[in-house]
Length: 187
Image 1 (cartoon, rainbow, N blue to C red):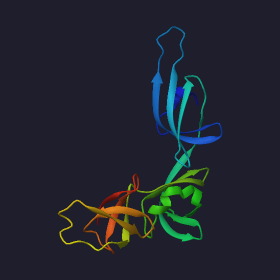
Image 2: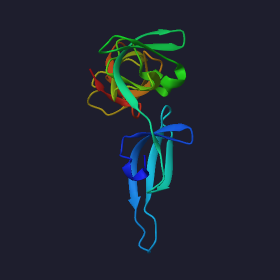
Image 3: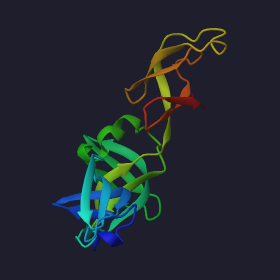
Image 4: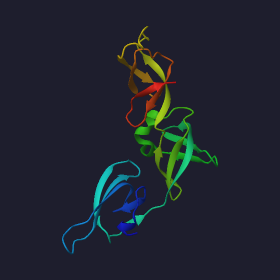
């Protein structure tokens, strides 16, 4: 497809790497005979590494058919994460390279994930924006801790550590924002 036809959210291949288009900026030169150029903000699939690309209007990019399937986490077998499709109950086996940093947010019963597939092969995992995780280790909850705005470290069931308010104790379930890895509330 010509770069003029590329839309935000499209998945394209450029020099052997697959990217998702997040932003497009069109630049029209004022001089006669100047070419219209497009600046794309791309993120690699999988991996999510940012890449900026400038192309002329008549340059070509290969569009890739990426499908997204809603799935829930079933279990972990060795290093492999097993997810089950929410509609047809088929299983997706995801290697640690595909799961990446999302592994620290995956716990038993995690739902509303999306598996990204190219030619029926899993290439990336999207976890929900917030996940519920249990606190397994932290300093004791303080009386009156809700009146102050102090925080303390807490280790969660997946092994990550986040800063939580003083009133959070062992066994509490909290929400963690998966975009920044921070405490997002108590459930």
